[in-house]
Length: 420
Length: 173
Image 1: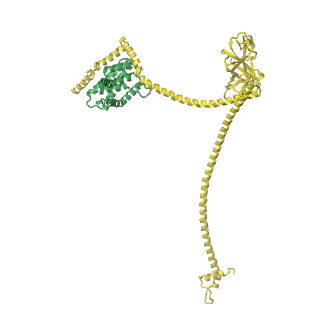
Image 2: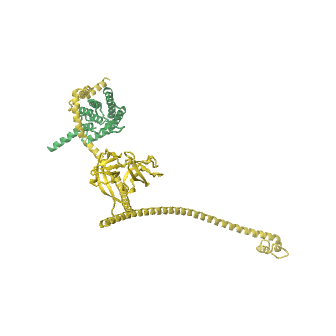
Image 3: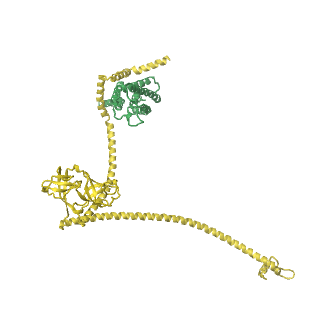
C-alpha cells in the first residue's frame, strides 16, 4: 500500500515538476501561470488586457496567413461551383435564345404582314415630325389634367399632334403658342379617345377619370373575352385622330367581364412623373412610285415572301412529321393487329388439326361398327331364312342336299326368298 | 556546407512539425469544433497534445502549448488562460501515463485519454458555466468528447505513420 502510494506520488511529481530537455518551465509553474492569467483576466487587469491586445494583433495576422491554403481551396471550390452554375445557365440560355429567335422570326413576319395589310387598306401611318419637349408646370389650365411643354409653333408643333412618353400615349396638343404648347392628358375628363380592346377587338371611347385611370364609354351589351391575361387598350385610329395601335393602358379582368362605368383602364405611364415627352405627328406613307420606293417595296415583298417561304417550309416539315408519325402509329397498330391475328389463327389451326384427328378416329370406329352390324345383319338374315327354309336345303336320307354348317348350305338358305 | 545547412533545415522541420501542426490547428479558420455539422465536432488540439506529450515529449514544449492555449482563447473568445490550463493538464496527464507505463498499448492510451478529456471538459464546463457565466451546450460537449476519443485511434496511427515513414523517427509509437 505504502509502495503504490509512493509510486503514484513519484510519477505525479515527475510529471508535473520535472523539467524535460530544453524545457525552461515545469508544467506546474505553467499551470500556475495559466491560473494567474485567468484570475487577473476575470478582474480586467490592465497587463492582461495588453497581453490580450498583443495576442489579438499577432493572431489576426497569422490566422490570415495560416488560412491562405484553405481559403485558396475554398476559393477554387467556389470558382468551380460558379463555373458549373454558369455552364448550366448557359445551356438554359441557349435553349431560351433558340426559342426566342423562333418567336422573333414569327413576330417579324407578323409585323411585315401587318404593314403590308395596312398598306393595302391605306391605313399605314409613319411618324413624320418628332419633337422632344420638356414638361413645364401647368397652373392656369381650364382643364383638370393638362401640362405645358416648352415647344410651340416655332418648333412646328401643331394642334392635334400626339404626345407620347416612351411610346405610350399620354395626350394630344390642344393649344399652341409660339414657345409653348398645352397638352391635354388622356386622364382628363374632357379627353375622349377612340380605343380598341385587344384581344376581342371591342371598340369604345375612353374618357379620363382619375389621375391614373380612364373609363370606357358607349359600349353596351359587350363583355370582355374570358382570358387570364390583362386586356390591352390601344388607340383604334377611328375618326383619323390618332394612329391605330398606340398602347394606352390595360384592364384588369379580375374585377369581372362586364364593361360598365366601373371598368377602369389603368394607364401605363404615371402622369405625375412626366419630365420629357415626345410630340409626334403621323402621316400616311406617300406612295410615290419612284425608283427607291419601288425598290423598297420589292425588297419588302421579297422579305415577306422569303419569311413566308421559311414559315411554309417549317409548316410543311411539321405536317410531314405529323403524317409520318400518324403513319407510324397506324402501321404499329396494324402490326399489332396482325400479330394478334396470327396468334389466333395458329391456335385455331391447332384446334382444327386436333378436331380432324378426332373425326378420323370416329369415322374409323363407325366403319368398324358398320362392318360388324352388316355381319350381324347377314347372320340374322341367315338365321331367319334358316328357320323357314332350312329343311329345304338340309341333307337327309331322302335327298342328297347340303350338310348343315357348310358354306353350300348357307348359300342355299340365303338364296331362298323370305316371303315364300 | 550546403548539404549540412540543408540537413539542418530538414531536421528543424522534423523537430517543429508537431508545433507547426498545433499552431495551424489553433490559428486556422477551418475549425474542427465548428464545422457546421450538428452531430460532428472534435478537438484536434487535444489529440495532438496528448499524443506528442505521451510519445515524443521533447517535440512539444510546454511553453509553446501554453502560448497555443492563449492564442486559442483569443480566437475562440473564452477567458484568457483557460485553454492553456486545459492543455497543460492534458500534458500532465500524458506525462503521468508515460511515467507509469511499462508496456505501451494504444487501447490503454486511448482509455486514459478518454478519462483525461472527460475530466478536462468537465473542468472547462464548470469553470465557464459557473465562474465566467458562459452558456455551453452539454450535448455538444458530449458529442465533442465522443468524437475526439474515437478519432484518437485514427490520428494516433496517422501520427505513427508520419513519424516512422515521413519524419524518419524509427522509435515512434
